[in-house]
Amino acid sequence: MFGFALDTDNDPEIIFYIDEVDSLESRKSRYVYRKIKLINISDTTKAKQEIKQSIKNKENNGFIYSLDSNQKILHGTFIYNFRIVRCEENDLTINGVVWNESFGYQKALKMYINNEIVEKNLWKKFNKKNCRAGLALHFIFKHQK
Image: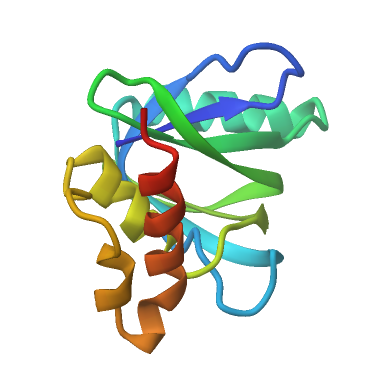
């Protein structure tokens, strides 16, 4: 699960929830202008209103947060200068500059959320394509409490 919050310089206030986010990661660069699909939004009407208002106020910076099952923030991805480019029933597609993690990070985070990190050196089982996810797993496992 994900949450979306505008950048307020304070504690984040999640304004809507998202079941899935497509295209948060990149193999090329830490920040890139890209199209992101927000899939199955909890309140599409509110999401559109908040985003349009932030654009009108020229404050269209925000975060897409990865959340655990208790809706606690685990990780945030900064996105700025975003615009709505497509609106479907429960989905929004936005363009913006994304300060993203390396390809595979979200997979490692999902494994952490689902308690699938159960053994040391699990990262060694990842293929070359998902090597960074494996390294993220290694880091997460080492820092679990």
